[in-house]
Image 1: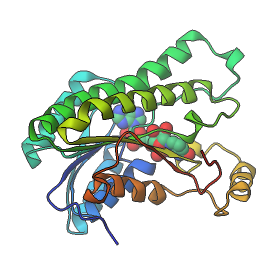
Image 2: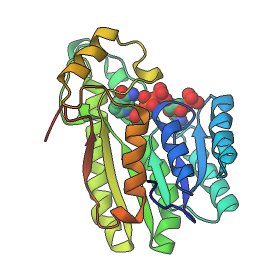
Image 3: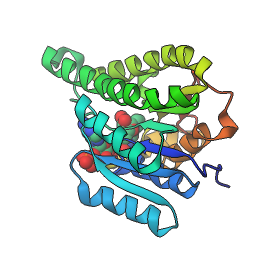
Length: 251
Ligand code: NAP
């Protein structure tokens, strides 16, 4: 079953690969028009947009560095020019970070991740929400990480930056709710993508074994939750954090 998104217009950041690509395709299958954002992988983003169009949907690929205000404003303007509006914004772009003990970090590494993560969400949401506010309708979904709620060694900057994203989302939900705009956060567990390709197979096996559903997640698991939150079925849900993790952590 697909949530009906016919007539909706979506932007998915970091949609050339991994979780973002799955989200873009799921929203496209559900009937939304989709702006498939990427940083460098033009060919991959074009392939995602082509797959959506091949299945009867509407999509285009667009380059924008989400940490650059002018790039993001141009992306939002181009999406509105093509599709008339923005109903759904998925802040998914992955900002890199060093995986190492807290004690070994330099301040520059912390600052790069914190500002990168916050700039991406801040610039993109500010640019897109202006159109949503005018029309008193919107669905904003941040892709966080379960690591923002459940600590794991080595993930200091990632956990801290995603926790800042989570907290900001709740303020946005309070301020934008009266305007008909929902803001929610999804916290995925471990998902095999390019971002986790460096992790040993033993880690995937260990996580799968410790997970009640006895597997690690897939990009489509996250895409399903996003599609639900983007749909009218989730019209009364805002300010929430949904774990998509097979039950490995239960708040
Ligand atoms: P991924 O496979 O490495 O893909 C990263 C995507 O982000 C690519 O489309 C990349 O574009 C784009 N990107 C990177 N920097 C960007 C920028 N400055 N502006 C615009 N786009 C940018 O990552 P992923 O694993 O799918 O992660 C997606 C999201 O899920 C991230 O927010 C991540 O923190 C979160 N997450 C992932 C996992 C996991 O286990 N994989 C778990 C929890 C949360 P190019 O292809 O052009 O470089």
